[in-house]
Amino acid sequence: MIKVYGLKNCDRCRAALKWLKERGVKAQFHDVRQDGFPEKRATNWIAKLGAEPLVNRRSATWRQLQPAQRAADVTPESAIALMSAYPALLKRPVMEIGDMVFIGFDDAARTDITRALEKSR
Image 1 (spheres, rainbow, N blue to C red):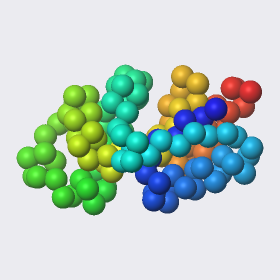
Image 2: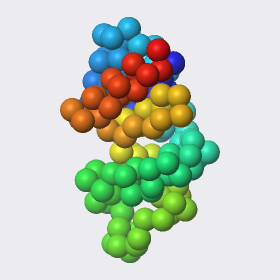
Image 3: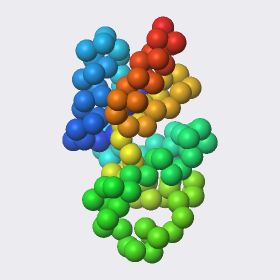
Image 4: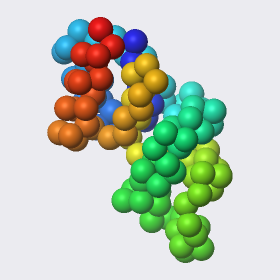
């Protein structure tokens, strides 16, 4: 089963869940705002991918942060703290397939996810 992290009102998250369902893939959705930000999981994501790819600097939430917060370097610790305080800063969706982690849902991500699904079967 795939674990999908995001926001229930996020268009990309809904598209990812629909895409998975159309392919007969079972997915468990975790709303980071409603269900809580998974700090332990995020630590794992950062270990695999780095902190920078997880922080959505194009979001309205990012633009509403204090200038000092936006100007600071994104470290693993600061990324976890920011996303815990502001779950909408998480670049979405984050998908876990086995021990693999994918961020976003563009054409390249769909290709990578498809390959990962084929390997996991």
